[in-house]
Length: 307
Length: 326
Image (tube, rainbow over all chains, first blue to last red; front, side):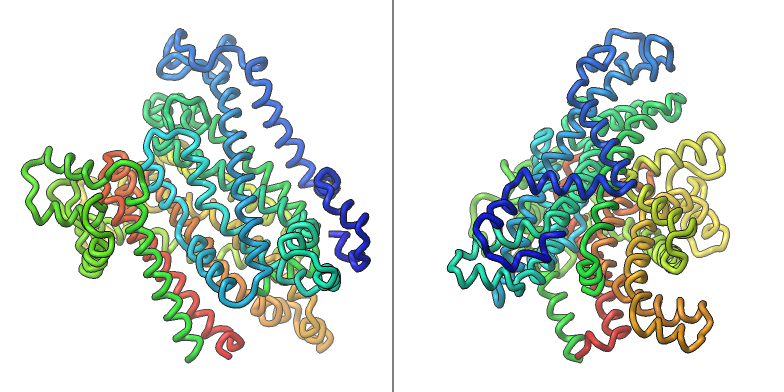
């Protein structure tokens, strides 16, 4: 949030520099890195992404390979044992990172894009349209999202991951939109926006090139918030059997483990391990946000609190 | 009074929008849920014209004007006529929901109040003792726990406290030998069954209240009136509770709505893990059996319950904060 202090000079080069996406990203990462809790989150998240990328190299077996003895406890050959149909649990866990990590990141990204588009334009326009959009956003905020997801996913049954991403985006954008909107409202009356208006810039350019770069940290925060919600929602839907049961992901591992009653047979590792991965992945992003929150503009924090 | 009527108006508008969303959803979906529903229902026996009309009004048929469908749907909703469930044939959907709703309302309602009180108090302590162990442990710990999937916490508690330790019953809302009545022994039995699901919801939901309260109170502690109260030589405890915490409490109520939606969603998963006979378990059965009438009605009831709770909190907020009434 350092740029809010110096944007009074409407020099074109300064604006170009601010709008450069690479620099914006670099600064965001730098901001997050300087907070220890967030640094822990960044390292954890990077580890998960590497795990997902190099799953074929790390995993000892093919996750679909069911040729092993059924329902084995952990051994040297199968560190976490085998499932009820003879698949290696550890390999499934490693391959599962691919689906879970990519669903979280893709759904988080899409939800954030919707939140940016809605939140910024909603914060910039006034009068009737502002009220109308506000009503819709509030409606999506109060409607419990998991039941809505369950209902949509039930209608689009056997749709697989695309459906899960879709329902997560449909239900997950409203919170970010609301946060970004209130920040847009505070920036709307700043001098540099007025200057941009007088120099004849179009509203969309003012919103996305002048105002947006000033809320990088908020956008990052709402991305990780949405991605966290996405991973938990994906796991929940798959656990209920609303995903494609043939994909290997942490959610479907939990679904199969629950369906083969591993708690009764004592193979609780099959429930513990995928859930722990989901929790750790969600924690990594929550902790990044912890840092992002703490470093945001104090004035802003006060504003959202007083809302 | 203007605040009150404004809130009532907004509530009615939101209620209408939610009911309408419930009408639009099945019509947006590919295929015809109504035909599938009637086909499923006919496996149980002949479908009477009244039942067919009811399902068509609720789930939509390609023929017939949308407007007339909408009107008859609204009529049904007003009369709580949600048709017949076919996974629990021939029970009407409304009686199934009527049996399940009290369990969820009591469980989620009481646990939410406990989580709110415990979380807010811990948040007060965290802000007052900022930077000490009393701050970092609850805030980081609460944040950590709230990132955990509800159903996973539920499974862990079920395994360790239910199966391994054997301290609590592992499924249902009361013993199979017991019949629901108002006796004290049945109440104790039901409480025993509610502890594990309740504990799960509590563990995953109180972190948000801690963070919210702490962050707001850190702000109010910087206000002039707190400095003034301290300068007047008031005891630290009354400065914390009666000046800082009291003013920081209000924003907690505004976040109630968002939090409640999440808690209700999470409790749906918790109920399926513990086979707790509330609306969550019923929704799970409806979804796995593709029982669309039951599913639609449950979604509507859950949404409306959350809206009503939000409305009540809004009204309470108006009573607590005179500024909103201007």
